[in-house]
Image: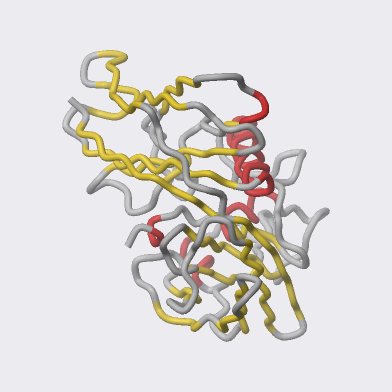
Length: 275
């Protein structure tokens, strides 16, 4: 149940990187991940280009889902063809998955996808999960809080934070400015986390957590290319405050032959009740 709550990135973030100058419609897009102790989840869609139509909505995005792709995952010892199934807890509500391969730290997972004449591939590694030394909520004004955490990054490793407010968000959302490059810091790090950013929502971003909310914090060790993807996402949101509009620099991808993200997440979870 943990893995299903990751944010949709492939289809949505392709929208922020696709302009008429950089990509055409109909290219394969991957939103996929594997987490320690969990089965893989892969969504396959076709790219949409902002500007080719005056308006678009979730029905347009859902119409870009590819349900007949061949999706193969290997951990270097075993290869499995993932099965496509309807999945109402996701958007788009169709995923490729299998319980024959579960995420295991220390392994590299190679993904290959074929649809029609298009083929793509990607690989991601699962690092050893890390733990936070301390997590707490700190008031910034009456009824509003930030989540603080403390830990010591390991050299050569990368980290990201995701949050989910119980009853208000289905997905874990990336906390803004929460990426850590272990080589760029020395010693103990104190992080102040705002609520995660939902780029698919038209509602104004709620920066702080509110009194009485139950919040799940997802602390992930990630590889460099996953880090680069999320850093590009942050930069796009920071520059435009709406990644659905093109920016001058494309969001990076670790997909060869397509777009999106195939990510490995080694995670630890923390639950907080905001005072």
